[in-house]
Amino acid sequence: MASDLKVVGTTARQGVRDRSRSRTLLRPPSFEMRMMAPALLVLAALSLLPFLTLIYMSFSEVKLLGGLRFEPVGLENWQRLFTDPDVRASWVVSLIYLALTLGLEMLGGVLVALVLYRITRGRGLVFALVLLPMFLAPIIVGLLGRFMTDYTIGLYAWVLRGLGFESDVLGEGTTAMIAVVAMDAWQWTPLVVLITLAGLTAVPPPLFEAAAVDGAGYWQTLRSVVFPTIKGVLLVALLVRAMDAVRFFDIITITTNGGPADATKIIPIRLYETAFRFREIGYASVIGLVMLLFSIILANVFVGVLGRKGLTK
Image 1 (cartoon, helix red, strand yellow):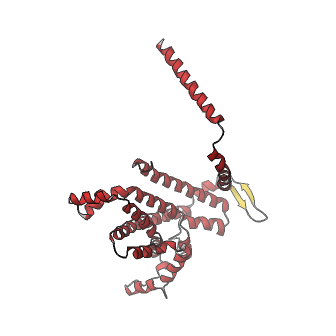
Image 2 (tube, one colour):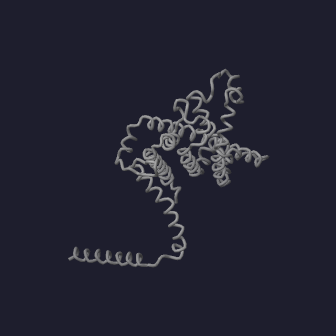
Image 3 (tube, one colour):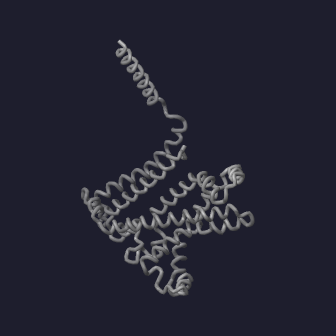
């Protein structure tokens, strides 16, 4: 008898949920949804259609001569991706580049932000000078870096020769990688400074006063008060720079174009060469989709970290 009543209760609740779901589906769209509908349709047309076309291209051989034609090749492009040593090498270079740039920018950005936070006089002028590289176009930064490291007339090359380094900075694999990482860090460390400084100014002053009353030193205050308070801001800065570094292209194209001997050929450069130099657009579509998948996974990792720390609510 009790089991029968339980079944009847469950069925009744399910019926209520079904009627509520039906009323929700039959309810006319809200005013806000009707106003947003045209923009959502345009956005879908601009993003979904190219994305679906890209997926179709990844299973095709794209012919450009005599008009655009897609000839289906099945999984040939995807099979080639997993056996291509050049693409694997570019991914290794990309991961090295990503780790170096993120590490340098996060470390430098946090240190500069801590220094700026303690400056009381002339802080606005110093802050403006620190942020200046961020407002330059990456192509300008690349041209400037190429000029400064030029073996014959570059200032940095002249200084390095004075220190005993006689080789061409952009002519050797290791130094070329260090040079492009330094250029990227020079331009985008100010963004980390800006985000970190915003987090520092949001730390409640009573926390510093409580740490001082407890006799905590500067480093102990940073470790116990400041970093736990701004860790969400630092993770956001890391996410922003990681997403940008994955698709980094301009400075390396201007300075080394992936050389010497593919030492700086990160995956966006490989994608560009495959599509526009070798005209293998179907295979380039596969590389692009894998880059997109890598970016999504990376973003989900950071969002997951933020969620576990309760910073996404």
